Amino acid sequence: MHFSLSTLTGEQIRAGRALARIDQSDLARRCGLSLETIKRLERIRGRVDANSRTLRALFEAFSTMGVAFESCEGGGLGVCLAPGSFSLAAPGAIRPPGSLRKTDQTGADVGCHRLIYYSTANPESPRPLHELLEQVEVSGGRRKATLHVTGILVALNGQFLSVLEGPKDNVRQVYGAISCDLRPASLSIISDQSAQTRYFPDWGVCCGLFQSDAETVENEPALRDGFHPESLSPSSALGLLSIMRDLKDSSPRKYLHSRCPCPLAGACLDHTCASGASVACQSDHGAPAL
Image 1 (cartoon, rainbow, N blue to C red):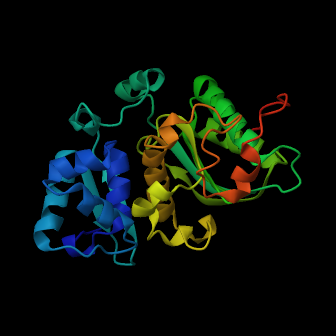
Image 2 (tube, helix red, strand yellow):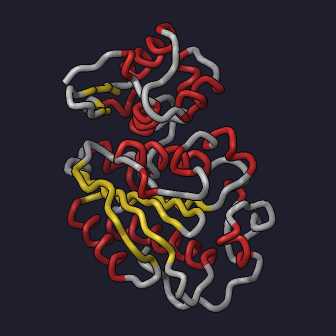
């Protein structure tokens, strides 16, 4: 394994930032670069177009946080985190919630497993998509509390991209339940492997598409002419999930406390979901496993 600054990719920058649990603004501050530069580099698919000073600033900033990049002779890419590096994150960095913070500190997350998959909303499901997503958020919170399985689900145009993280047996148990649920269809695994630690220490759902997203995701190949998660490699999927996690916590989504009825339906560009999201939810028929 070896690494050259000239081979640094946008996917590695996004994955490295996810590992360090910092947002784009914090990375820009640590590198002495503008926020717009960080956003531009993270949107790039493949090797980044940047001068040596910018590449060196990124490399040194990530090094101080224990994040290292690797590239293989066969063309593969890698990002890893040195043990104990979480203490290097700034006070404003993304932190695990209280229920998992002790787990990270005690090393109980050793043997963490990560499963990334995509699926499609079943068009024959009796429930509108916005109701399904509301229940996904609720059921995911319960899994986090009982099974310590965390992650995020991204929903757009009736397509889903999701990651599950936690103890291997628990992750496999949750995915097995999802596979048996009739509401998602055509499940396909992108990556199923062990992980040094969690990239996503909480659970959440990021849905919809808004005009304000354009600057961040306009050059993302998987979001051209719809949403095509099947085109993503493991590293690209991880990078996109990291971006959508950040968008979930920014305007307008940060004001989304319930999708029943959805207060953002009027501004949402995802007509697959928004068309029915302005109608109040009917009685709850049970939480899906998705």
